[in-house]
Amino acid sequence: MKAASIKEIKEELKSRSPKELLDFCLRLSRFKKENKELLTYLLWEAADENSYIKGIKTEIREDFEQINTQSYYYIKKSVRKILRNIRRHIRYSKKKETEVELLLCFCLELKSMSPSFQNNVSLQNIYARQINLIKKIVEQLHEDLQFDYGNELENLVD
Image (cartoon, rainbow, N blue to C red):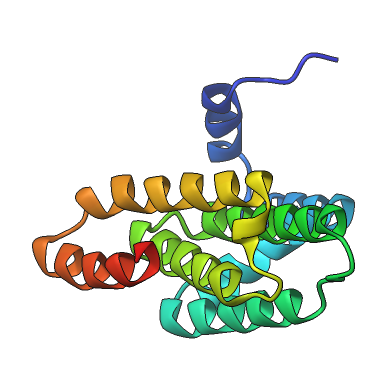
């Protein structure tokens, strides 16, 4: 079965009744965890972005505390998993400020982690990529936000 394009789906959804749309949303939420998380964000958390960011930051800190630090192999796997989760939450929000906040939190936690990520090339590369990504995003923001996030970024780079 070939999936329809977004344009075709949009046109078809316009012709459906609100009850049918509700049924479609509920069916979608049954199939994938990501669909359910996106609906949760859209229905409850999108209105208060700051509390959403705080919740994700708390989750990031908890994930970093649970990392098995016996071997850099386990550290890398865990860091990649945390980053994957962060990217998923960023996709839900679609706001550049949220993306910067979450990536800054990730880099701060990675930098403060023990043993240091500086002892492993893969972790250094992950960190460097995130710093570069933050720099690119900050350039697109308003001047005041650029200044604020620029200061935080300088603290991470030092």
